[in-house]
Length: 114
Length: 111
Image (cartoon, rainbow over all chains, first blue to last red; front, side, top):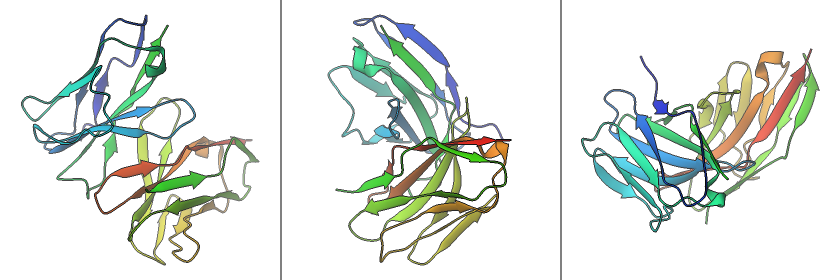
């Protein structure tokens, strides 16, 4: 069974530029999560989708971050414009039904903002 | 609110040594507790979990017991290998289903 796929694996941009990350969850998984992992910290949930609807985006900085999962399968997370403090690893995870199920994580995208 | 505190790393051990990583939590209600492991260049993987008090989770020689009286979920392994070198995250899932992670503990095992 293929795992959670993410691309790109690495991205370097300058502040005020925009960037987008892509995630393809495990086939058939209804719930998709985006986490931000700042160096030296644990992952922090940014947004959770159930199919193509948002369940929780309480910690998403909505002035610059946006995410979509239009067809309830793959998802894109965008940052526009990026700030230095956005440098982090962005992790995507999926679970079969809901948040009570085990979450499976992708390898992450390491973003560096200069 | 809920929170997870785990010991700072790095923890450096020799092969076949005993490993303990301390984890304590603060939560309302009865959370489920987890240990995740992140090997270099890979995503987080679930290592073990416990869903109620006194449950013991175990996998790959690792164990952790859910201690409600001390609000702890310490991770242990009796004899580590070089391949256990990774970052270990303690996490809890509260009643709303949101995973909350500790800061992670890097473990380095030397031959």
